[in-house]
Length: 344
Image (tube, rainbow, N blue to C red; front, side, top):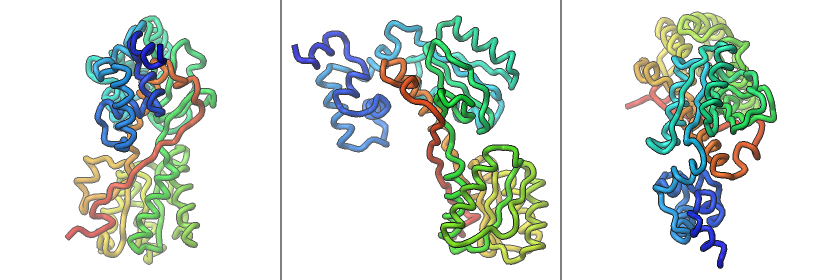
């Protein structure tokens, strides 16, 4: 009996479809679910493979949970954090309503509480665990576990684990490249707490992009905290010392909001005199700024989806999490608004 027919006879899995189409399980899932980020030719191959194997979309859940509990644990340390929520939403979207049950546990930053929740999840026989951190600094590994574990946003300190984080170095570079593209050449950088990996990574990207253009930062990097108050103070100090500044990269949208306040106090027009770019794309801040704030979006919902797909791959029998280790930095994106390009 041909291999394809043997597979169909035992109820084809998503992994079978992916293998026959010559794509990853994640790509096969996207194609079957009609996602737009799949090339037409690839989608056609996946659909043809699914037809040959008699695999239908409503088999996705069964193929993932056959012989398992059909539950996945989401273990976070900061449920109220504005970075954690979109990651959890993205993961839940990928799991799909009614396909995989999700058990959400909040350790509230307490290591003992985290161990309690981990034990409870394993006692419930979850099929996998996504660990969502509150910042991009490395966090302690959970160690070897009997189920697949993916770390999202905060990487594990063990390179043997699989961690997915936003590419903050690329984000810093993207911010500067955008300002250079608008004609800015005298660029300053105001960021938050220098103890945070995010602050250091963004600065690395900022410096690299300027160096590629044969430029240097105006003044030193202004580090302090992630607040509007610091943005106001830092901008005042920089402009007093370097009135020639025509572009400012901010380490967060909160800092950028404070910078905009000071620029008005200095009678600087934004973006005509000085262009300002933030980071995080926190829409409640960015869209209510005057003018609206251009920002770097860390694509946190996509990060959550990617973590869920790694769990899917492991549950469905692919190499999945076991075949992938280390920190994987996922793309960020630029959201352009009126603080860098004048709206008319």
